[in-house]
Length: 141
Image 1 (cartoon, rainbow, N blue to C red):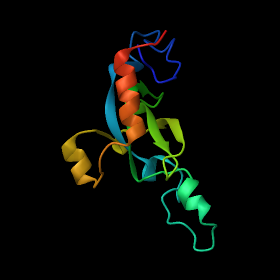
Image 2: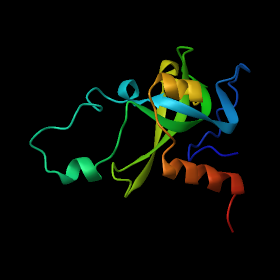
Image 3: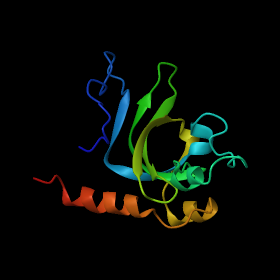
């Protein structure tokens, strides 16, 4: 089962038999609200006095980013959290990065054309499309 690098072993059930972890197999495509999932100020506009290479080569953290959800995990307060990873990269697409996140349910939406239109999100980034193609082929070797 693909867990996106998350170690989910040992979370299947509690001693009382209650489910603590709900794995999603296969992982489901989601949109993650990075503006609320990450610390305040992540989505602020660039500063006027910064060097020109920073906006071009810096990490692109849009308000809503495509990713994959691998599971739900229950906190000791009974609140559920989404275990996700978000694929992003440099603004000029020269580099790529997968960010694992634990996200509140209100900051995750199923990735559908309707949700993308509602959140004004364009086409899937090329690195995510390549990742999806590779994951369908299975492990290489």
